[in-house]
Image 1: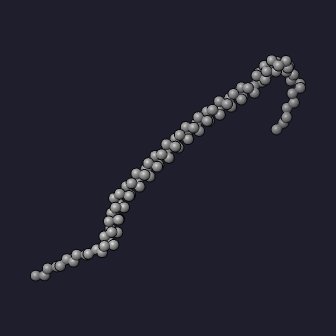
Image 2: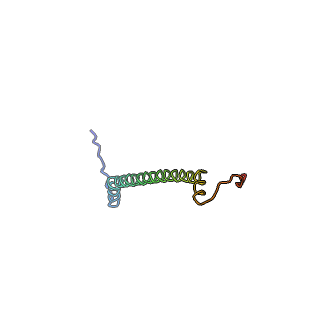
Image 3: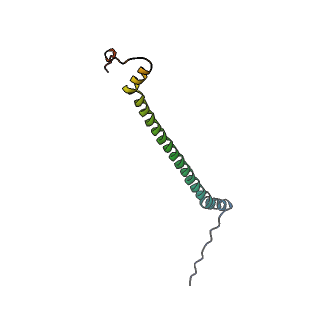
Length: 99
């Protein structure tokens, strides 16, 4: 009857250190890096939402200011201001410039 001898592979000191380093990287550094990137992504999304909110607020403000400009530039408002300052509205003195 034959018995098989199993040879045990011996690792060198440097190989053992490399194996420990790889195990350390896979078990500690990689999950930490994953958590860090998720946190960074979350912070970026929060900043993005803040900027979107700020843009929306500014667009609403611009729209309100545009409406105020239209109101101030209306013919009735111009005539009221002119009459308040002693001026009269004379349509024949108005010249239209073609675009």
